Image 1 (cartoon, rainbow, N blue to C red):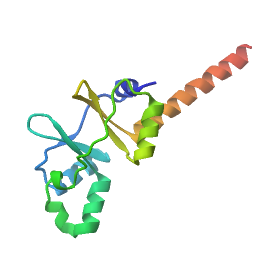
Image 2: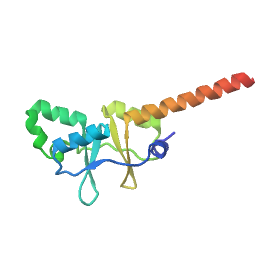
Image 3: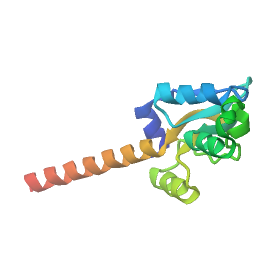
Image 4: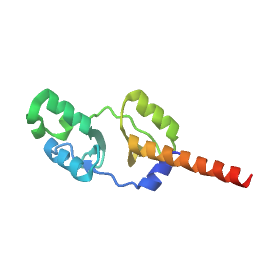
Length: 143
């Protein structure tokens, strides 16, 4: 399976924030939506960065509660690692493990096509293993 397969199952709904949004507001969105990160997108729809729970915790650790009044652009990760719909699950797993990241924007021809997490990758891989196990059981049963 590839990233396009994950997006087909998951959908391509993307929760975004503006660079000027306050960290406190973004943290509320993360909590309400039960997600770990948002994409930070400017007024023109251009991807500027990713703001994750990890970024917010780092900000709290370094600056205390004052970081909640900072803008998303102050804490977001702007040196982005991205993937494409045609990338394989195995290559994305390796990339996420190597770079120690949990969320990847999906770009298709330079345009934002989706946003996947390590949880999406794990779910996809588990579904694939279950399908393979079922196929083997059927093969053995019909021998």
